[in-house]
Amino acid sequence: GQKPYFHCPRINGQKTTLPGGLVDMRNRFDLQLELLNRDLIEMGALCERALSVIARVLQSGDLTLLEEVNKLEEEIDHMESEIEQLCLRLLLQQQPVARDLRLISAALKMITDMERIGDQTQDIADILKIGSLQPAESSTLIEMAQATMKMVTGSVDAYVQKDLVLTDEVFQSDDEVDRLFLEEREALIANIAANPQSGGAALDQLMIAKYFERIGDHAVNIANWVRFSVTGKHGRDA
Image (cartoon, rainbow, N blue to C red; front, side):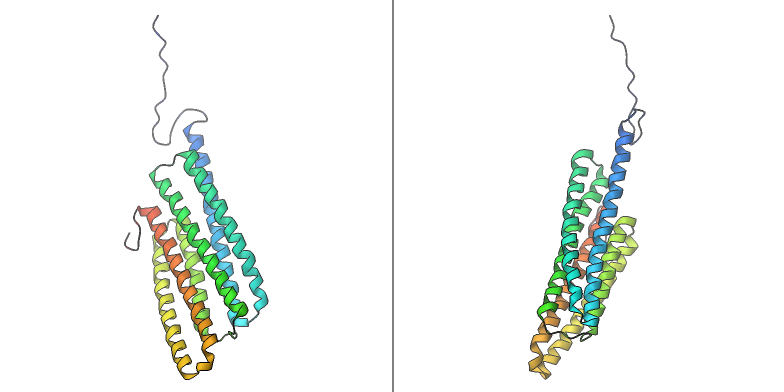
């Protein structure tokens, strides 16, 4: 005889009447995206804390504080691994749509930059441990530390809030960090010319300033990936 007709409810976007079907899958996916956001905020906060320790050391000269940078850098590395695994699970298990795919791929790029920020903050700590820099010897370096802290926080906040205005603020702060680097470099060149015996400390200062400039560049990279996650285009003009 004729086979009975079974009605199959039409799937339309994220809506379905199938119990335990796409609605539940989407809900689980959204929960995992929220977890991704929280993890990114935590990783960004670790970077900010590491930079704040460097700023305190530059102001006080208390090198014992640098042990905290070592611990924070290890935590940052661990967070990178955790977030990478979460992103890969989302990609493999959930088959995300285009916009979600942009969010996840941007997150994978961002954690690479945050891990590099952790590494370069550790590099600054290593210079301070063995160098001859005196507390508050360079107010410019302290300004650079504070500016890069703000950039890292702003770039991660921009991702979570999907706020392109915050990315513009990161770009503006990077221009300021670049200006401070050039100012510091010129001052150090003049100082070495006038006091050749100060060359060692001046070189330490220049290397630290260069690391801060690179950290600013990584924050800009994060902001660019935020713009990609929102608009599908990469860069300041997106």
